[in-house]
Length: 320
Image (cartoon, rainbow, N blue to C red):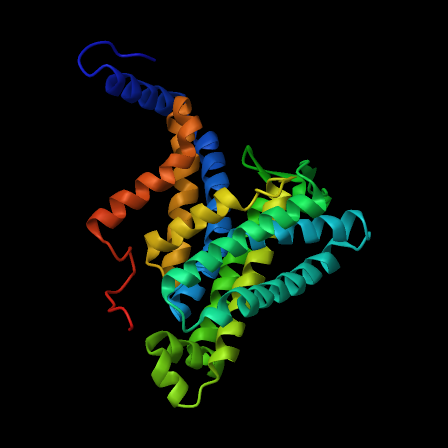
């Protein structure tokens, strides 16, 4: 629908919006909401890994998206090559990805812990490129299809809405993971140590906290959540390539920043904002579907303009 007159492109855009509103039924709106919530849940789950590492080390783990990519390959080969049942593969992928996270922390980040932050940043980017090129060398750049798991890919009809069962599983897993993680952080000795390290790195060391163990545990938890997200991402979006983690990783980082990087609840909120926003912008503005990736950056700019620390972020002073 095109509205002619003053404003040109703006009027045409509003015309498309009103046309989409007229054509959209309650069923189609519910369908878009289901898709948006499932996508937002995936973003939230992966974004937690970014926010945890930053909360402890004040460092962005740019290899986190590529850890998601490697987890997808682990799952693919576990099911298709070694013929391990998917539920055992799921557990194995979590363990293998957690070990990969610890390996990256010990080789790329730990030796530079006392170095300037620019050095750590360069090392993080290098770890990301290493994983991408390693995957390209080992698995080739040819796209692979994530194995189909019938119990997770079957369609369920609910009041005329066709819902893939994985879309119901993803939000539940995300919320359960959030509850478990908040319990660990707020009600366990490990969580107390994490909070102490995040407040003051040096004082925590003087108080006898094993800094290396706390940081390794943080990477284990973040990588395990990335593995859970990667497995469900593969089921929902089956294509696997060495560059799979680049855009989702970037969006999940943006989700963490939007929510207030370092704040676990904020990362979840940011993930849902991005997921629902991406799906709804395609639903209401079909001609803008090619720009759906730009939505994340626009939301980031708008929110940081009004609240530089993110939605739930707190003002902090940089440690020197």
